[in-house]
Length: 95
Image: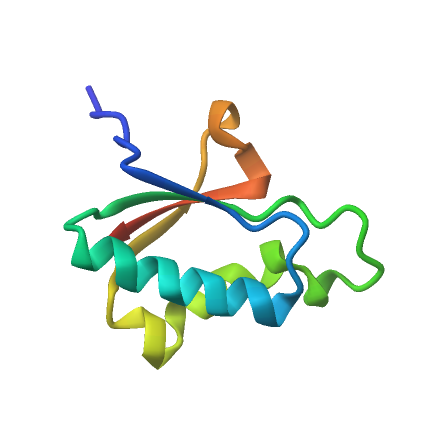
């Protein structure tokens, strides 16, 4: 039986611009690492109200996790279970 993801910290990026969301996420990752917190729930929202899909936090978030600045801290990224936001949230495990 698979052990459920144990959320240690949560960040909700609803209402942020793309740039502010990225900066806030980066700072949150740094803070969590300083606090020895490794299992994160990041709520991005589904981006339903955006006109351009590529301009939503939800669409860009996985790409942020792969870039050289953040990718070096991130072990894995997976879509959240429905009870934690489903398609509008991600589980992030830090290294």
